[in-house]
Image (cartoon, rainbow, N blue to C red; front, side, top):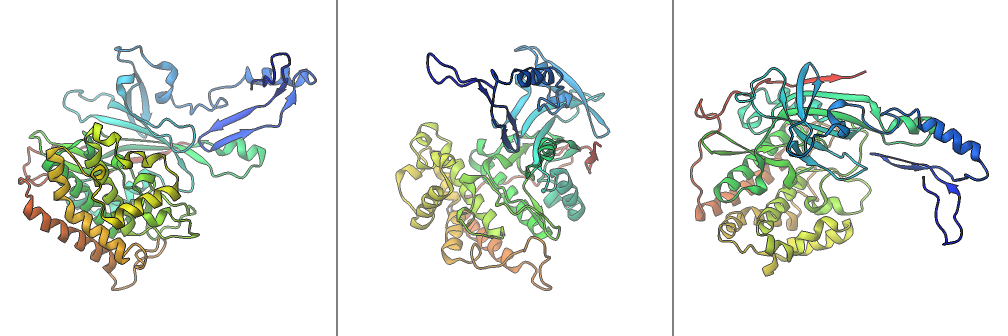
Length: 448
């Protein structure tokens, strides 16, 4: 709302008012403050009476950034999500993740603990806030569906995050001002979930631990797809791990914000994913593309390449892939096509640290199988797998999905014979290894 300086001797007195939120920017036509002083005074009168919601703040106390503590001093805020009370660490130390963006989901993750619990024996929790599109199902509902469909299958449940509580705030939405102004809107609403804290991303792992955690996530993803749960956003930030008290590492497939459920209608037709890891076909400017199992498999391919090459910081700075997150879709499609079709031996695309070279070779079977799937068009272009709003045909049993999965796993097992890994106990095989996790089903509530 600042007048524009046009020269040293003359100032434009035209005033523009802009509203910024997670859906975009709305800007008014300008008016001349000098000629319409009464309008300007009326504006100041209105702004003086704004509350937090009017200023665009979410209004939820656990994310009131004006109450941060000073560095080194633990400042927490009490909040209630669903029927459970939590104390949220609002200091810089308690910030686990924050997306630095005005528009979009703007996910923010902070550590917290359950009120009345034992800080030393209870699991550690995190509270995640985001602005989801109203046309998408909430992550909480998707997790609820997963738990129903999985029916306690440990091959799925053990490799997912544990949700504790969930809350949707339909009254905290980007649609309010647009409805008043009669502007077409793709509204976003504020949501919060609380879950058990994990130990980190699999990109932080090396050697055998990376191998096991990666395949834990891959197998879990396949089983979910067979149940009709399509993740659709495989990236380095969504493949995480949990470590038991004996030091054994297990992968966890997380972040179902962009997921879909087969058979349930959706008004959202946008292509989903994180650009550096999106499948090539999804980067093409086509009118309509069904997100297929092979697209997510290709995303796993880009993830493992990224993890291994970025592990050495000095090498990563000179690697072409390090800049992929800054490229447009067309340029990124060209770069990825060159890499996946040429089977590049460019030294910039090769790891230099010894244990990473071993992992690079260990994953060579996986890389070859994904490349062949792309080149032969076995899945990414031709096989019609799992239309989003239709169940599979009788007797099909997702044969194309099985075909892709079995080929990738088979090729990977062959290379594992040349680069074996140490045995790891199955998760939960020792009653003392995997601690009991609370709340087998999370709670979902909607605030009216």
